[in-house]
Amino acid sequence: MQITNLVDPRGMVYSSNVYLIRGDRNAIEDVNCLVDVGNDASVIDQIKRMTTRVGKKAIDQVILTHSHFDHTALLPRIRELFNPVVYAYSAFAGADVVLRDGQILRCGDRDVQVIHTPGHSDDSICLYCEADGTLFVGDTPVIIWSASGVYQECFVRALARLCERDVRTIYFGHGNPVTVDAQTVLAESLKNVLTARLKELANGRNPDVSSAEEPAPLIAA
Image (cartoon, rainbow, N blue to C red; front, side, top):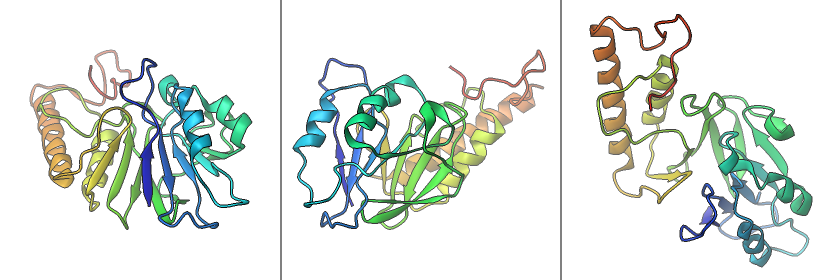
């Protein structure tokens, strides 16, 4: 699996990272995939400069980690130019395929698993490649340094599922990847989240229900 971030962090346009996944040998059967499309039009020029096999599409599919603007704004142009199959966990932007938790997709020359991680948004997902130990998290908060905040049970369960995987590299929607001690980072975050929930319960507050009996914010600001 070849992973290339097509967004220049020095760019002037606010955008998520856009990851191009290709097979190691760029074989005709490999599935060229974008994880998110971002908001930076320079991504299109980079795709056009990428070499691919004769008769092979530059982009076969797009997987959206969630529906926020900075991750999806370029989608209409990507559709127009490359005609990929678009996957998302909701029908946002007319996704061609609405994903299911646990679904397996082919990306490059590897299989990846869809893991629903509600928290940053209801439709947030992570993508996990067991063969390489890689995890694409979009904006799912997986680095949590403080044992404070309000975290709903659905997010805690999702984070616990990520900790069960053999994760060696974490690719984020913004910023640089974690390439060292990724498993330790996840475990420490889960520990802090669980401690924060225990504090809320000890203080007589239910992290899953607000004082107005409405669903509490998934992730505290």
